[in-house]
Image (cartoon, rainbow, N blue to C red; front, side, top):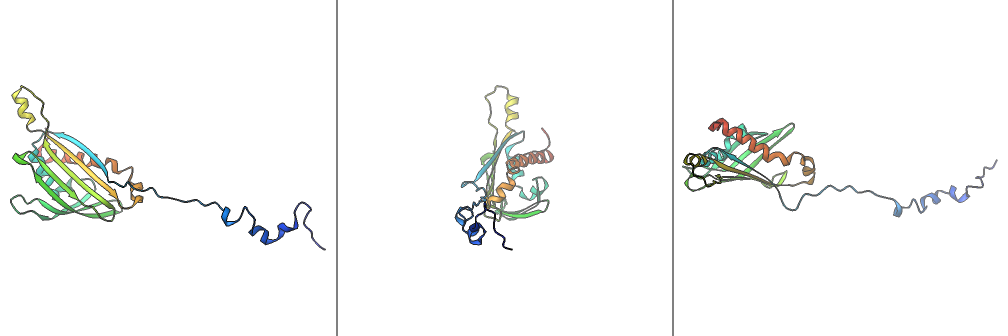
Length: 211
């Protein structure tokens, strides 16, 4: 018995070569789909936050420059160690290791630190640079403590009180080394500066008292 294809199906379609060279199935006509990870910005991102605190700027500067104490109040900082300092009497930190951990994450960041006290005890600047590690291409934190801007007032007691108030600015500058890290952290990173300065306010209240 000879089996023939039905009249509606041409014999040429039964040849394997017909399918391999069919115009709709050729390699040139196959659709491909690409998956592209979002790229990080070419410039570092910045987070900034400001607080007015009712304490002298000199005392707040001392607290901020005490990096050994960061593990007691900075969120997710489980260990903070100053590894070198300037000569006495200031003995400001110049390098420090901060170990950060939560969940299964554990990383130690080595920072170059610069502390500069303003004249007449009017605060100062503390900058820590932990750039070029495995996660961040850029990672810098800068604290600036100044006397609070004063209004023109006639009340002597109010002027005296304002002299003990300070303005604290925190800026965090960062750029991830891998765009995947940026995607994974996009919901967390924007609130980091606020969390840190809130924790610092708690530290101020603990050490200097509430005002």
